[in-house]
Length: 94
Image (cartoon, rainbow, N blue to C red; front, side, top):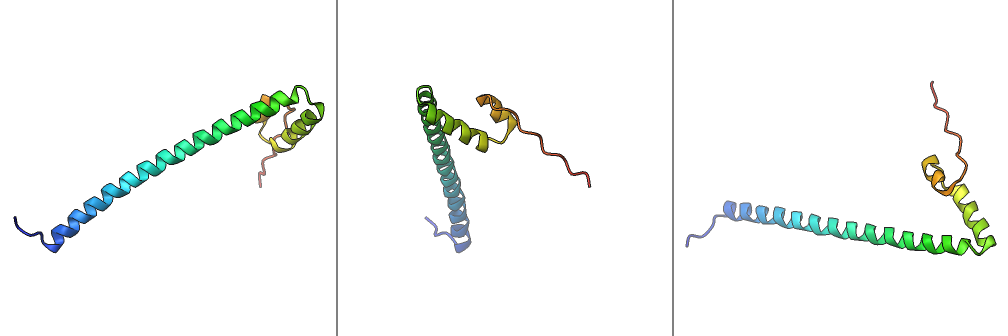
């Protein structure tokens, strides 16, 4: 078997590097997707627990709805909680 030249060895290593980089990106993307799913699930469960507790705890309900009213700024999101819409920002035509 003939020995590879340095140029051939370099080309082979570059191809291997590209394959490893692609594999790394795939695994990293799967991990990010898994983390996002876990975070979304956690938020859904926490929200359900808080909303259920609001059904029986008037003080908590007042606090939670106040937080929602203050922090939910997009009208499309405010509708979900039956919050009154906020005025649309006026466009600057200067």
